[in-house]
Length: 463
Image 1 (tube, rainbow, N blue to C red):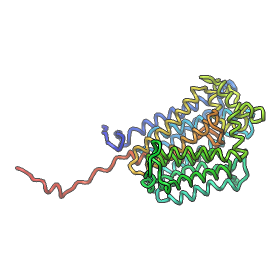
Image 2: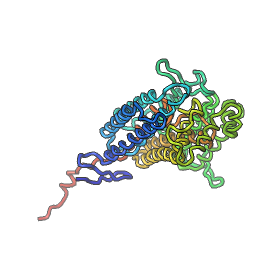
Image 3: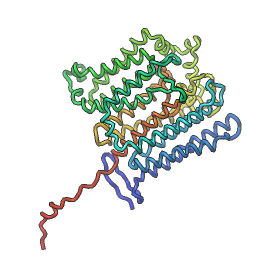
Image 4: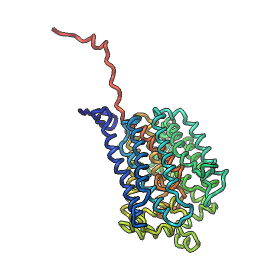
């Protein structure tokens, strides 16, 4: 027997076993989220060797085991959470493993990366489990608002003390572990800081002193926060030559500031400052200049020896509508970045416009569910944190996909879940776990009010 329990912004249906029916929906979608990458894995083997890959069974069982563990943990510790986030993340992670395996079959630098990526995915699921089990209430994170700011700054500064790779200082090297990108973890921590800070300061930041050209201009003394974050993003751009992280953090703050204050003027100020800052830094920083020049004229960059931007555009063009088929493209021509920055070009070539749009729709749906969680959250901190994490994820996807497709200059960030990168996949699984925790709290039915015995005693009983 089922019953409808009204919650904030949604209707929750309880199954006979006492758990929300959305968990069964999640399980059904997880089956497809595992089967689709397994069939894609088989497709690669048939295209390259004319036979099913030897490791297909192990790959399918491994991905299925990870998805099953994650589902059981969600069923136990977040039963009212959104049912779409986990299947979408599993599908993206699984397709990323397939694409990396497909590129491992080509003579690319670095050797086989798919087994390592599967190991990092396992660690990501382990962190996902830890967040759901030990984070009892997301509102606990509000206590660490300024500690989060300090931790984020440390993570952002660390790469300065390590050698640059490919022109940017965004990695740190840990003996026995390898290279990590601290910015992937910093985006989650700084979202916690922004949510805690803006929850307290949003009333002051929403005040407007005057109206100009249809915009409510903020007071001069309230412009301090946005100028401080703008300066921080410029410092990242100058000292680490990391355009992607700079755009991510400044864009994240502006989006959260707009959501907290509902003032369009903050968006205008943010876009103006980001353009001014990027142009100023590009005028004297050689690495940023080269990225902009490669974006403006990829054919000239190809002649000068920087072949990747042009090769990526040719990959998208040769893919057409339906693509050449998994394993039948020429992504090896892109070079060493085919498994990281430019893995989305492999999607465009071998899966075509339809496949690329399907991947982008999966990303968009994950962001939409995060925004929906923000709308359903009952507390202001949860609302801001959910929208901040969703915005960070969405901005990163836009920055990477836009750079590969030539919409904006390439930034060097990794495509979430899809590209090779241990720190990226681990951090994004943690991000999804926090969103699920907020979603569970938002949709959990409120406890029924306790009966008032005094009120019962005052009732008049008539014979």
